[in-house]
Image (cartoon, rainbow, N blue to C red; front, top):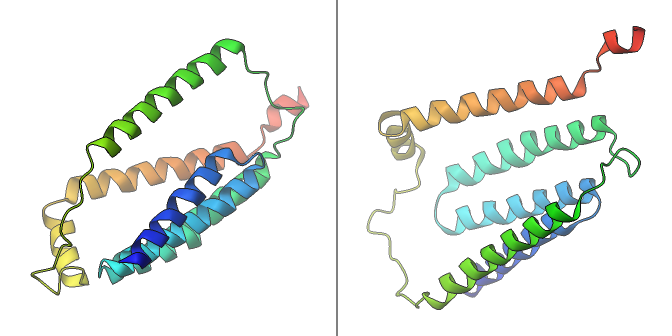
Length: 167
């Protein structure tokens, strides 16, 4: 049980580092570590298939694509637009609302008994595939369309407009 809490602490810690890192490359590297801690959580919950998929798909493919796209965008201080004080105030208010929500959720938290799985084959591929392709087929297909549109957007961001340079 203490392993779960330690990994949960690492997940929250590296998630905070993702959003507070000044360098976008460091932010993506912290995101890789965060996804690795999620993989460990899946292993602790007896969901080996989800752990392998998370490791291969998210850490191996999507985050490498993020890092590649980020390096193609060539972000630097000169190209960054100046943020107005209104944007900063709205961000501060949104962060305060989020903090209030977290505090309220922690106050409502109570300690429960550990969950004992009645079905030991709960995280197996056969059961997961049956549920995924029968009961959750529409959300599964919608997420694939979302990933396809994100990939097209990354390609469009990475390609340079040749007509604007010649004109």
